Image 1 (cartoon, rainbow, N blue to C red):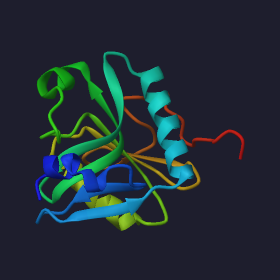
Image 2: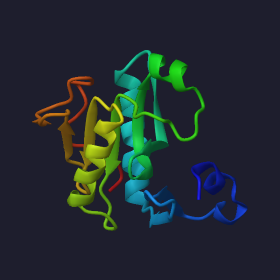
Image 3: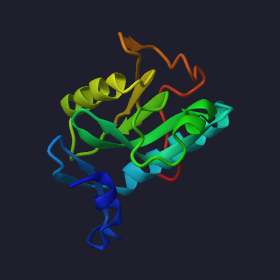
Image 4: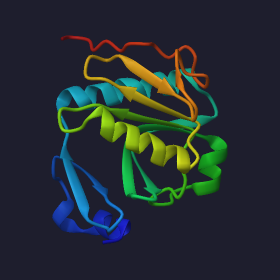
Length: 161
């Protein structure tokens, strides 16, 4: 199944699942929790606050060599957005790709996604752990903090918890 077919299929509308595909076009669904969604919103707001000339985008579809992956949040520069506009999925990864760990996935799965996003041109890959601790990576190593958004907090705290 091609990505646009998944997006256009009315059977997939209004389901509380996140969709991706594997390299064979099979649809993979993962449930989203409210904790996950709140971290996603918080990351989105931080990125929009810290980085100019671009846009934070939640649930961003990216074509990889292992099918279409949907990053929890990305930050795409204005140049990236001028280049790819509304392509669905993006044929390349934006500059920053962020995944939020959930009970339904593992660090090993995130390591695989990290490699896929870097192969598609990402400059940084971030993981938000379930406790809000952030891990920042460039293509070569784990970083103490983001080089692209150095003021991004090392740990996110959810209000009202």
